[in-house]
Length: 122
Image (tube, rainbow, N blue to C red; front, side, top):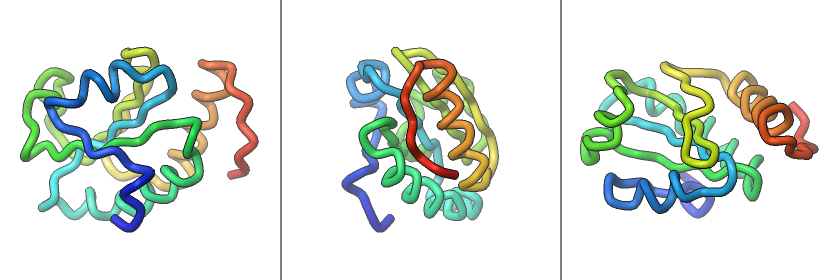
């Protein structure tokens, strides 16, 4: 990934403190390095990490190296996106999704669910 600074590397060990402890919307991308659809999502995740920097935290969890979190949330397929707010899942997305569609989902969550003032354009 090109911009690792805006994306948090998640593990079974740091998941609680980084995701569950977050006070803002947190999108977790569950992926496997060997799976092609996960690589298709990489540029989308990178772009949205920059676009929503400061409004949404974005992290990546490798399901091959970290098995506890996928098991806890019943994740059996990748790519999968889990969006958390105040420690609770507010949206689940399975499979590849376009940048536009994912961006729209994030904007809707920021505006409707959390009353965020979002100035991003689609």
